[in-house]
Amino acid sequence: MRAVMLALMSNYKQVIDYLYSLRNHGSSYGIDRMRSLMHELGDPHRSFPIIHVAGTNGKGSVCAMLEILYRKSGYKTALYTSPHLIELGERIQVNRTCLSEQGLLGKAEALRPIADKLAKKQPMLKASFFEFITAMAFQHFAEQGVDIACIETGLGGRLDATNVVQPELSIITTISLDHTDLLGDSIEKIAFEKGGIIKPKKPVLLGNIEPTAEAILRSLANERGSPVYSIHDRFKNKALRPHTNLSGDYQRWNAATAIYATEILSKKFPLQPSDGLCNVNWPGRWQITHFQGKTLIFDATHNAEGCQQLVEQLEQLSNKPIVITGALGEERGKALIKSLAPYACELYVVAPNDERATSPEFLISCLPQNLPYTPKRSFISELFPSVGHCAVGQKGDTILITGSIQLIGEIQQRLTTNKAICLSKLQDKI
Image (cartoon, rainbow, N blue to C red):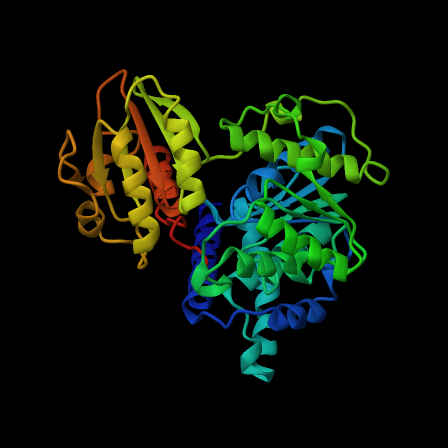
């Protein structure tokens, strides 16, 4: 048995090394490679119904809400989201069960020769990391015979690898400035990219979207003959927006989006009454845990819209928290730390374990000089030196850990496990 386990671990490490090589290979932005790979696999993504969700923020939350609403009504559900917090299998779930290491190993070993053969035939068709994982997910969902799949885009929409699908419904949650180097430097350009998931004659649901972006999305839908629904029409009165166990007014908008989506699809996918929205599991989004007598709040925040939502949450706290933060990208990090500083009683700045991590020294230099505390440059290994040990704060303190999802995953892993292979850093480059 021990020999079998060691062999499995060795093979799993080889798979992870291969996935790292795909990540480091990078790729141009587009979906031609994904179409070719799906064709070689027999188009597994066409064998199950899909709800396709894009948006600057909220798309993962909406997918998680939709998944539990359908699962509570007896449907066999698939959930595909990114990035992951700790384990790669978090991205690929059936009935909210993550793909295991053994399952991931099997899927990767089956897919690799097909992907490699395609790349050998035409080097431009070499799959990226995200394309390979997406293909694994679609293959897994097809083999599992799921009743409905909630699929989150990775980046943008029009050229995203997931956009090979033909969904029952497309959803666009919010639109704000993010990934401007790839999606464009204006709301209008980003709306056009995310509107790329709107399919001819298929309905599209618009979430809490500003008028300029909504007008562009409606125009795209009109060109494609796609019926348009908006939660601003369905939930004009704030009191009518559904409640959820996820904190924040923005999560009520997400819950409204999920509910309206199920109403739009109710003839084909009827639901039973349930408490699903009160039991949504979406880690790392204002996730509150109690640890060693301290209250730890984990919140992955990485863009301007997310910073605004984070500030709204911080304003609800009775006492200022100790804040631990780190970011990828200087512009994102600068906006984040400036938003956080007035709401902290202490501030620790760290670098996530990623080559794109922003220098803590740079982030500290962005802060005003008249803060009532001195921001500290620190290391994750100092603040969380061993499994189950948080060296920051005293009993009764609130500690907010916020910034990139890589930071959240890295710290959560240090708190809960001493696994040798750390996958929180195995993320998409685009």
